[in-house]
Image (cartoon, rainbow, N blue to C red):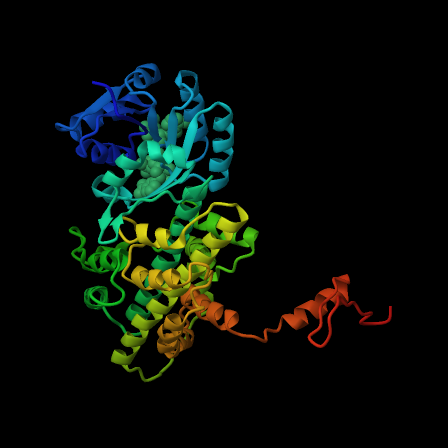
Length: 469
Ligand code: NBP
């Protein structure tokens, strides 16, 4: 038996993706740098799936149908380059490598160029959905050359998640478009998670709700407009009881958030491309701040906070919290899509935003009911780079504006940080304000650096001597 497709890297994602492909009727050759992992995979996970274990690269390559199609699911960064270099001597022109890891999009661009010279096709493919998604249907974001995509389209469509709008896989765009879109997906994911966490903080510390009660409210929200994977797992987390201590496990988890870099890359690329994404950026900062647990503990003792005696209407605050989450999530998606659209123009990706929203509807971590609403807005005017620029958005946002103002004010009064909720509101207030104080910034720049300025009252570029030396 020959392998229809090969997969390298049998950690959690690779194992599940291999099983998913094999369960769709394909034969899958697998290889892992450390043979023990392949042996364990075979023993513990593989049943009657057509999996061909290979323990050296030559037999792996020989086991594959030509032209060869090989998915890499190895750790992002150097391991991808090392693996490509190890594979190259065995490959023939026309063979295809697909990097399914979270590679930086600039690495993917470089690899596409390098491999094109060697006549090897390459796809950079974002895969979202974690281990469950990889096994039962991920959201797949392949980008590169369309010819390369055609070589694996059938398999990718079959293994991806399905919604009423079709399989959650499409050819995202040219060059590193797939990994760029996956990166921004993760940037939005950071903001989405942080917004939920900030709302949770207000519920537990200001409304004095316990985890079970918070779980019930989250479940209730999940049945409405906030329906989403992240809302669903959040209410399930609230109900999970630690066997040893008999209390909700979430209350025992140390408040230090880890990160693997895709959120930071999103913020960096937004800064490079000059697109405002404060909600995404502040979500990264929130994780970084959380990491300084010891310092926070020490400083919290020095700067004691008084709890104000303000009357609270719990039901109203809960409604405002639900609205604030919707508001912030809308802003996170709006910023992320603006970033994708700018990158698509700057890097000539040719990305279709409606298609991106469609393939995010199932399988991935940011799948959410709100995507239908966002897609309607994009479909009305595909050139609309800013989702706020729409009649439907206008009423959606106006309905929630008082709520987010109220919530961010209450959080301030009670000394609670709400980086993403605040930045979502400030982003909105900035982008919808005609007259910003940037005139003073320009004057200051011209004062100390002769950087010049434009004027409202006449055309031209100006500089004045603000002070006699
Ligand atoms: P990891 O990111 O933990 O990578 C482990 C795999 O990389 C193992 O198979 C390991 O082989 C292999 N590897 C390493 Br490390 N260095 C190597 C090298 N120099 N040459 C060859 N192989 C090497 O695995 P993962 O969590 O399954 O993720 C795989 C990819 O998918 C990553 O890029 C990740 O960011 C991305 N991703 C992960 C998730 C998720 O939920 N985990 C979701 C979406 C995307 P070994 O067994 O010999 O050490």
